[in-house]
Amino acid sequence: MKSTRRTFIKKSSLLIGTGLIGNPFIAYPSSSKNYTVGEIMDLFIAQVPNAPFPKTVDTLKTGSKDQTVTGIVTSMFATLTVIRKAIELKANFIIAHETTFYSHLDETEWLENDKVYQFKRKLLDEHGIAVWRNHDYVHSLAIDGVQAGVVKELGWESFYKQNAVLNLPETTLGDLITHIKTKMNVPALRYVGDLSQKTSKILLMPGAAGGRRQMEMIIKEKPDVLICGESPEWETPEYVRNANEMGEKLGLIVIGHSASEEGGSEYMAEWIKENVSGMPVFHLPSGNSLSVK
Image (cartoon, rainbow, N blue to C red; front, side):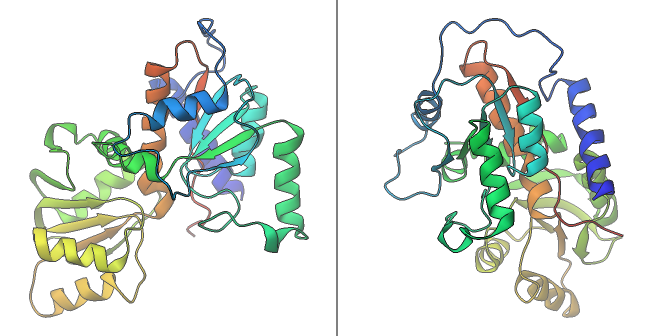
């Protein structure tokens, strides 16, 4: 826990210094109007092709669409640490990319008597914080907002063709891993393949697209390396291991779900700055729930 907190504080400080996160000590200009939670949600959804979707997990988890927004925090997860920081920043709207209550649909009936759920819910309700999950919509932009944010985080914008394939200058699998660790500030990555393998064609699939989808994309695009957030060990990692065992040069880098998509929450913060005039906005990396020893 201490290590995770140090990493959180370190990365937040770095982002403040580079302007990727709003600095709470900078005075924001007054907004030209008062925005409600629902108005900001609708403003973003309006730019998504074929939206609003009839079925989506992108619902308001706490709070009301009618409440006036005092400030916005973006993050992968609305962790207790992120919620407490939002309270300090007087931000009453958290836009999270992933679930708030531990399941894809955020179903809470089974948790009603659980002390962890009760504590988190009470903290959000007592401070009037609205939490909106923006997952399906940000992924469904004409250019996937999460992927675009991750590409920017990795410094690969000049190689990005608005799809999952990037053609980088030739490097090795080992050097590619080092680059990702440095840019994403992660202590360790899991991989399959030969670290000395030459690589240029990258298949970038942040998050958890699913093993079959990952393998279908490998078969279609024939990359040197697949970079993903996570994958069941019996699916894509086994496929890539078998490919190497038969003599193919194929690498796999597994970043971890949270770190692999945090750039998407940075993208969301930048979108708010550009489209919601004068709104205080802060990107707070939620970090990985799992530590590495």
